[in-house]
Image 1 (cartoon, rainbow, N blue to C red):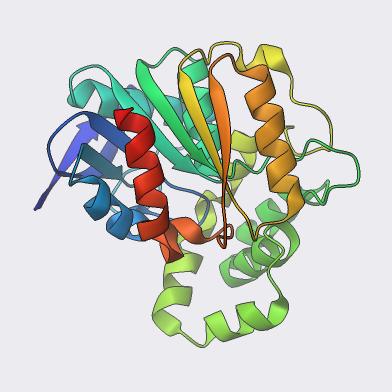
Image 2 (image 1 turned 90 degrees about the horizontal axis):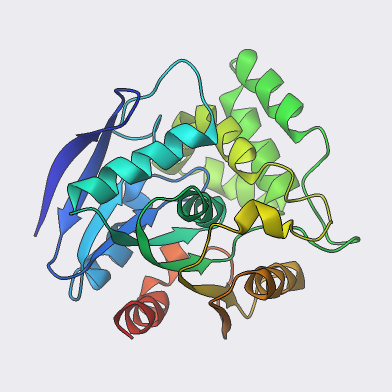
Length: 270
């Protein structure tokens, strides 16, 4: 059974979350174009072992937002949730949410352990990264109120989704309406990623504050760039391991939570 509540971030923004289960606390950090509904099944599985905080990142779902955005505000949101559960918690993040979780740990939020699924760093020249003008393209589309086009652009040009797959998604009105409703937060995830998708090695100084035990998971069906990114991250963190899960791809947190939950549970309880 879960209960819905709100915490107040440092800038006064209310952050909505669902709390379920008992045990050591873990906060779930969503990816781009996702809110807590995308991790409901994963939260239920983890709640058998942990106190799970499944929250809406700012600007999404039932959470509030502010006029000005920086990734620091989202780090403060995580800090408020960690304070709510007693002052320390583990974090699980997927895709850009994994990078946000890393930024929270690097900034000094009291994190016990980090479990990450496919942080989308682009660390090798030749690996496909987002367009150089991604931020400008998305900002322009949103300013023109072309939210559907912004989602399409992000899915095809950043996530590498085939256009035919996006076409069929548009035939599911509820799903597409949810996605276009989240489009306004795409610049947030672009800011969270910063300059880490330029085909250059990660800057160890940027992540030197991450001293906790970290597990980086990747899917065996995902592009090799995710494996390279995971290995690069584990090489610069002092207590990090990488594990590849056969048969999974980048959407596994939503599509295959039963295969990911045991990995998270084993790591956080170990």
